[in-house]
Image 1 (tube, each protein chain N blue to C red):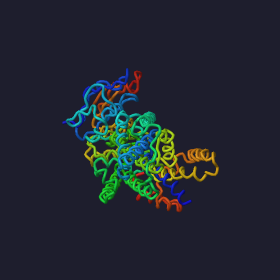
Image 2 (image 1 turned 90 degrees about the vertical axis):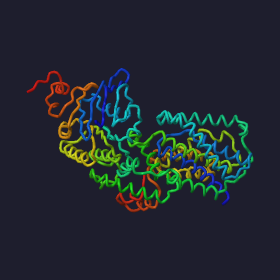
Image 3 (image 1 turned 180 degrees about the horizontal axis):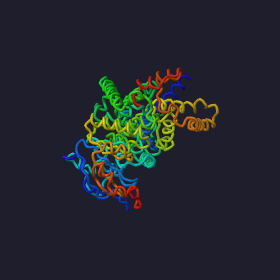
Image 4 (image 1 turned 60 degrees about the vertical axis):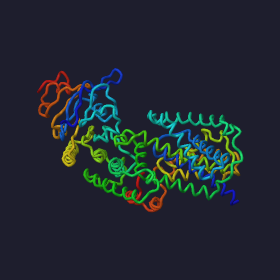
Length: 258
Length: 296
């Protein structure tokens, strides 16, 4: 049974069709790449899956439930987490607190009234979640930076923090929106290694938007190519690399094989 | 003299109670309100009517005042926060709400309209106000340094990302509004029993602006900052009583100076605690005090 099924998904903003009649399947523990030129509608698809936008028509089926029309917080509770193309950390908080906020959803359960009077069990729960957050930071190698402000981190580490924050939600499906943007080839390959290791460790299914082709080819089992809101082709990395339609979309009409 | 100082201190602490509530809403949740004087007014009238007409116990009346404000905040918060109004639009909505409440107070029979309610008993003595203020600050602190406070802070920092952390924006914002309204209501109840006479035009948008100013000047995302700012702003006009008409100019000048030289507020995102004071005297790595700190 597929983890995620997208059926005839369409999103219109006024006259602009950002995503048109898109369908694809994501199998369990698979890594699917979503690529395409800028403005192809890749991030729109992510926003539709995570409930930031409501689909105009079409269905998003996660597990066996319809996600279209649910609010983002409820979709997260079903087990979908994401990172953002333009990093969205809680900038004024520490790295540790960023992760703790994500952990709150599943690990911190105490009623409001008890917390107002700070009963001992609250302090205990806080201590535990702190420990858990440190463990998660260790996975991405940020444990040394735990008490730094999130916006004081270098760019690459901010991306890693976003990933560890998404992991703290314990998702089954992880959406990564250009995790290697702005990284040099070495850094992006290192990131690819990290994504591979967390995927195995947490048994994740990953949907990945990325422009760095080396990262995409390295990680993805299948690739969906989008252009002007539509699915151009879908296939294995080898198929995509030699597909004439893809080459045309990326390089234009005049492209001829050298 | 001591009597006078006690009086000023009591009034300042009453202000602190409302400001602490508003700092949860504005400083920690990131929404601006220009109508919090309405909650103070509702609390003041509810508590005053309870003790004046119905001879209800003072402390019960104070709590009823707080609950009344809280209840009304849910009524105003439900449609505005559900619609996910952006911060500035929400502020305008609260401005209208504040005026509406004032007009209602002016036209009800039980509030005696614009004539006001005279002869309220002076129950709000300095020790009473001090104890209540400490309790409110203690509860607010526990709120901020908990899961619930963190959810509010996450929304202030980035509400799109907060939603992706499974946080329900509407519920958390409404909770903060409720909390701040209850604080304002309690502050209002104490105010009524301090000043002994209330009338609707004591609770105008100017009052609301002063509260917001104290929060912003004290530091958005700090509890102790706004508390200190509220105390300073209560003290300045009194200290400068000799300067007569210039004291309000000085008040404005202090506010401008804070915004120019410390736009993040007196304390910014920090709290005044033993750790911060220690850190101020000896340079240390930022890790050491944050391990103890908790959120923000």
